[in-house]
Length: 374
Ligand code: GMT
Image (cartoon, rainbow, N blue to C red; front, side):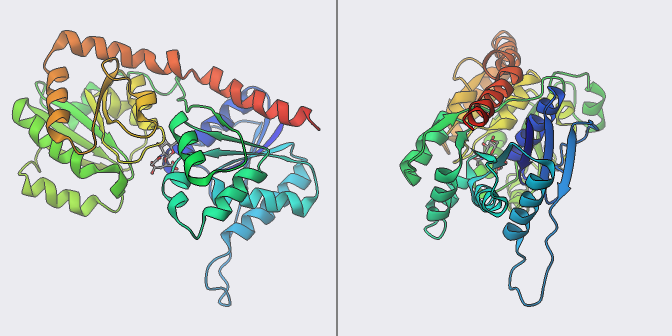
């Protein structure tokens, strides 16, 4: 198949899934055309089946806002026509699904449109009355719509009530990248002592991620067992978090490492992940961490319980219940037998419940059913 893929190239999990799916489909012989504003940040392989078409958005003084959506639709139309695409797989209902629908009208070709919902497009934008009609339109006019968790499907149906069946296709990780590696030297380089436990949090530090809860829970944990916290990522809450670590007197125990590649190395020196968001449709970082043997403590919301299975590969806690979060963290970190069991369960979680080959096949089958309908 000839498949166009559009995602936000710099945005976290959705960009990662779009890129890794494209790479795996290319390896299976499909021709993949990324149509994005920049080379997706995880697109780091050269493959003869992978092409990149850049969307450039010019700024004209007559326009108050740069016309990204129109430029994207126009580029999609150009690529559909020239490359004779069978299908466009877009990530995010708005603007990407709406752009794909417009592009299809421009070329008057029966290219199929698959839209994947990742969360923010529903859990945040779905509450915005200025966007609801556009989200509904994007969903209903797509040929098929997928959501990355059952929770997100339910939330979409509740909030948007589209006249469309939504398929759940869970996220996956590239098992060739995410597995435990020997990175012990990193620990020393970061000044982590041999007896210290390492907690990790990875996000874009938006308020929904509640990184302040991560820091506060960590402060409690560090009173019970020697520990360091790795905070990976950057975003609007960062300055506030730096102040919080000072107020809690734990600034020497919290390492702000900013945005990082090679997360597998950082996961490999970590003992526990904290993902304490108030909205999370899946929590791809939890799956990545697990693949490297790291159990997770997460909040009992959205799609997190589909990934973190309470008492198996981690624990689930209520939002903001810092006492219980710290208690569970100390329990797992200070009991080696329990810890090893959780770590083993975490390691097998991706291959047992979210195997990439099966998930890629689910997308492929969905594409095939749409294309066969022609
Ligand atoms: O979490 C974010 O803010 C980034 C966002 C994105 O668009 O990449 O993540 C969403 O999609 C990921 C991949 O499907 C999911 O793992 C994240 O849970 C989801 N984030 C939210 O629902 C807040």
